[in-house]
Length: 411
Image (cartoon, rainbow, N blue to C red; front, top):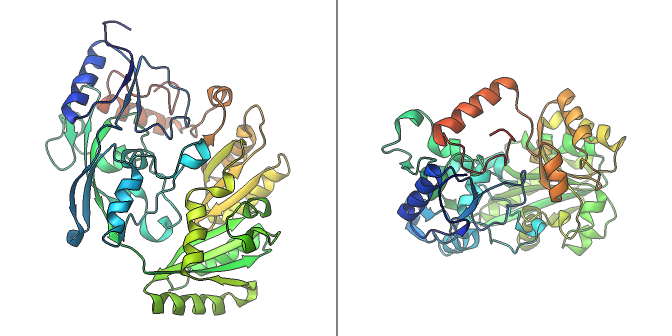
């Protein structure tokens, strides 16, 4: 490191203050750890930085037009504040962002809206409403040169052609520091109904979930939990069933939601639906899912795995023969949260070997520093994707000062 940039923690309050800080870091070759409020700081490789930059002081809703279904918020605005303001107008973020705070030692809603988009971790409703990145209408950010860039406006020459919102979503603060995000919002669902099944095997449960997704009833949540995980839920009847739990959710206006739930129950009679949760119980159940309550209060490593639903049960079956895993299948098996024992590599070798045969990718969400330092936290890239990612990194952050090594060791 050269130069004399002040190390330690920086929390700029304005976009221009942030741009000046980044420019100074670029000129002095000072690596920056980029965070929002820090609730996801322990995901990825530990970042060896000269200074930490947080956006938590850049808060507030800049624009909200309920009739136009648009909200513009500063990147450091807490998710809880965004959702409370939307709730006042019976609106919501339709992609139902997963709140990782509780499994990493933070309170609900403490993460920032910038962190939500930077990680692109969407919730159960993704199967119907799309991912977080699909709801981004525009973005303002500061690149690695200390320049303000924005979607739809004047964009620096060497990133022209990139969809800025989609590019920064899922980049984990390695390309640019978001300062303001324009989001598409939608009316909140008036009624939620959930069918609960007990005792289905993984393969049978995924079969039922995929059948439900193939119906015309606009299913908005499909989940299957191993017995040990279901026992950690808040609903006493479900937690006390001592069986794997499978859940299917429909949402809409009250009469429509009840009709659809009844038709789904009929279509899935062969799988013996046991319970139908009403509105309040349904909301509580899916709130548990959204905050990953089934993985709270335990220190075990936790993986987030994307794969093809038809391969999901085989993947877990393969792993179970080698290590003791507990699984929560979301998106009908397209997304699997896997809790592993506290092994030296958190089960990375076995998980990635299985995925190399079946297809998919795995990200380590929770583990201690030693484990995160010793393995690939994000799924290794194919050679062509490595080249593309390096070019993208250079276009946005040519000096490599943002979150160096957080996702991939040499980027």
